[in-house]
Length: 479
Ligand code: 4AD
Ligand code: MG
Image (cartoon, rainbow, N blue to C red):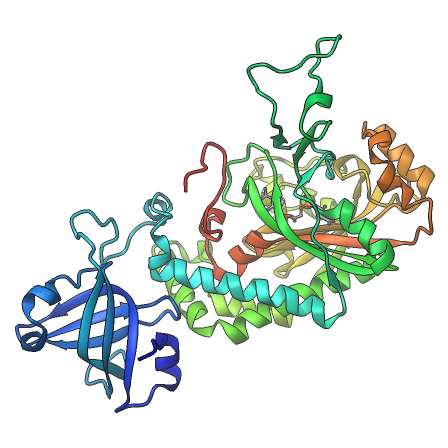
């Protein structure tokens, strides 16, 4: 008999029919006569209740069906007498595929802390929380490709190893095959990278944008969706050293077109989750309520589904950085010195406490900030006529702060070159990037969505380490 997934059994299984299921035991309980085994195979948040007759299978066999053990069971589907499920399976054949020593297995049939499960990341897929997150993550990946496909965008694979620093922030992991104990030296004492694998210094990419721009200058609408690497030493709940980013790049788009696309994209993704991940989101919503039940009312976040609907149904507020600074400067927490980084005026780099104040307290809606001072943004952003600000946009979300960063790009060759020189970006090594400004340059724009930041928002989880299967953070690269 072919195996049926539990998700299919619960959706379309017919009472009286016989099925074969395989999965892992979540719990087993019972009496002398009958055992109830909650079996989960990862296809859905719900378990299938297996009813096993003790006399039929013998206590020795059933005793091996401990939490974590894997089983194959054939049986008839029957209406369930118990509460909590509509159907259950009356076992006719039961085979233990893999035993699981209950004294050694770290996952017990009780609530474990997220911190504990982070140390058991090799096993946490077997918990309800992490299997739900993994399924939602998959749905979001699929939705990203769906959205752009429906708009005629072309997905471009940009390189993971590069010689450039797209964001100019110097937060790169070097890539080398040289022996670190015996580095070849140049006459001036510096390292001779011409002897390295690629004949030059290389690093893991911090963004696919620069290559994405090259593709957009022929294909018009492209997007990348790949891993990015940042060696920033920020041990926060919102930063990873390895994260996934979606970067669309569009020829002929100005900043307004860019904002429109970003808003439409985010709303599409969240609606997709609401429409396709109901069971998992229900579970995650309950998890969040449980987690926050001891918090004071004003510290609790909005109920998860309500929050997701709220974002889908409301227009994002758009305002300039300068307007935002004014609001922040005059705000209560600033006057009462409650911000860790007080806002004195124009020029301040916004911290997540400021971003969250604007979104959660002031506007109570997602916010798009534009036209930041050029000094705090990347070299490639288009300079405004005031020569002070650039056509940047950051989308700010409740709980997260910045979820998207983007801009209209500087397409004028001379202005771009001048910005690169001002910011010490080596122009000679970026000749290929500059070339697009020499040959048929057009206005163009793009943005980057941090995929794990989106996942934080959609799942209501509080720590970015819990929405990627194997997090990479400072001093941590286990598994
Ligand atoms: O604002 P960022 O640095 O923008 C860029 O990389 C541009 N090249 C994007 C573009 O215009 N094509 O990063 C974009 C987004 C941020 O808004 C944030 O959501 C996410 O990437 N991000 C991180 N996510 C997790 N961990 C980190 N260390 C992150 N750094 C940025
Ligand atoms: Mg940014």
